[in-house]
Every structure is written in C-alpha cells, then in structure tokens.
Length: 402
Image (cartoon, rainbow, N blue to C red; front, top):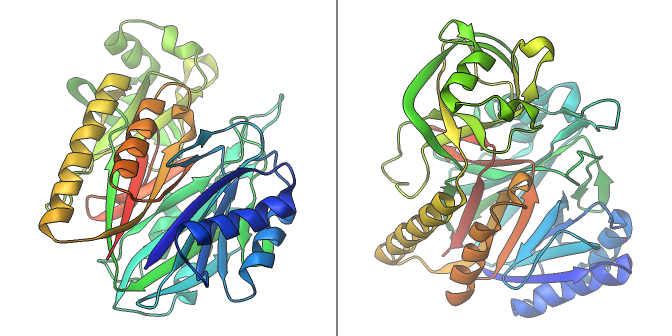
C-alpha cells in the first residue's frame, strides 16, 4: 500500500480539489489513486471541491469524506480560511469496499444495518472506517442542535460483521456552532448519511484511543435515574448537587458545554491494545432547567451504569500521548510492521485547549516519515473493551501498516 497527503486553502474550490488529489498522489508516488479521503471546513464549496478531485482521479477512484472543523497534516493544523486536506491511497495487495446509508436521522439502527448489508462478507477484512453526520438538526440562536446518536448506528453495524473486525472513524462536524454537515461519497454530495470503507488484504491496523480525561477522584457513582442523554440522579441524589459537592464549586454549571469535567465509564483493558485508554468519556453539554439534571452528548449511559467524574488536564493528556506513542511504536517494531500512513480524529472541543497533543502527533509521525491526515470532529470511534465505541473529548490515531 502507498499513501500521500496534501493540504490547501480552497479559495478556488475546483482547482483546489484537483490540486489536492494531484499533490496527494504525487507525495505518495501514486500513478492511479484507489481511494481519496477528502475533508474540508464549512467555508468551502463542497461540490466544486469534490468535482475538482474527481476530475483528477477519474471515474474509478473511491472518494469519501466530508466536513471537518479543522484539518491536520504533518505540516498543517488549520481551522480557519477554507481549509481542505486529502489522503490518496493505492495498493495491489489491499482491497477497498465503500458503502453509503442515507436518512441516518430517521433510524440510526437501520442505517448501520444497511451499511453492514452492503459490505461483502470477508473474513480477510482488517479495518472498517466509519464516518457519519453528527448533526440531526443544526442549531441556531434560539434552539440548540440535535445530534445523531452513534451507539445504535455502531451496534447495528457491528452485529453481523466478524467480531475481530475493528471499527474506527468519526462523527463529522462542520463548525463549532453545530451547523449543517456534508459528506462526500463517490460523485455525490450528501448529508444525514453514514459512510463506510472496508479494508482487506495485506494490512495491519493499529488503533489508539488517546487519553482525553482522567478521573478527578477515585470515587465512582451509579446512575440511578436517567432518560436518554439526560442524567437526573447519581447514587439516588440529584446529579447537579452531587457534582457541586465533588467539584467544590457551582461554576461548572455556567459552561455550555462544560469545559473541565465530564462523565466516564471504564472498560476492561484489551490485552492486545495496551496503549489505548480504557475510559469512554461523555461530554456534559449543559444542565436542564431548574437544575433537574445534566445533558450528555450521547444517550448511552443508562441507569445502573457505574461512572467516574473525569477531569481534563492538558499536561496529563500530553504525557499520556507520549507514553501511548512509545508503547505503540515498540509493539510495531516487535511485530515487524511497516507503517504506511496515519489517520487522526481529534475532538473539535479540544482545538482551543489541547492542541499540544495534535502537535506531538505531528512531530512523532513526521520524524517517523509517516504521512498523516487528521480532522477535528464531533465524535471519535475506536475499539474500547470488547466493542468499538464512540468517544467524546478524546482522539483516535490509526496507523495503517503492512
């Protein structure tokens, strides 16, 4: 497998799409692009960018991607302007199979089942990339955005697939105000959709769920009353009062979303993936009227779930990323895996306070001469415990290796 990455400011979108595809192919010494992963921010003319990329690639290239709050490459970390980036892939020993499910918001479970049905049964499949529209209804000054839940999508997608097949990817986001999101699929510009790309053949993926938060206290709590993404009680006490007491202040209530604290669930560590965090964190979007409860980013923490109060700490995040990368590269050397490319999906909420991790990833991968494409997104997806799960306020790094 060969890979190349390119970046541009897409002020002239058709020409930018053409040049992105051309430069990514050139950087990877690729004469015929099998897959082009293409991402841009909301200020870009999506359709013209896609048309330009298709003009260069021709009709046989699989093109998927879509919105990103910002893009990250070995040499760029950009959210302003009309930022766009692409990764070109080519291989004679790896097969790629794409799938699309539309009308995601109508029934996320049906969308997941549709993707799985389209993917050819393949015991040699090594990785499934998943991208989906995070936004069900865009927000405005009067009404907050309503999001597409990822747990039912993931559950229905993975159910008929081989248990060993890892699913990784991102919930796409166009901007920090939760505006409309777009997806690229082949020649089509769409929204309210989920996209999948299955890899099979001579590929060994390494997937790292990066450390986003750490427990604020050793104390754990049990959710005793909840409904969907709303949590009302912890340990049979009003949740807001419990958090006030543990945190020691009420100031967190004024933040939407809450910047320094989150709820997290710990899953058993995977013995073959010791460099991944074992925590799945859920962002607190705000509180309900009359302090009745808190609003989470996802609706999957049910009554009876044991949770921890998680704290964000930039220094801890950077130290953990250093340790995770060291462990990752050590395992890759031990298994004689040859890295070809890297994908990095980072929470858009961390753009202002945790860019140090992204810069560290840039530096490490550039030093190792591994081409990298990253995006800032709404949700990150990686295997945690026995299943692939959605994460908040975290990042996912995927190393594609021979």
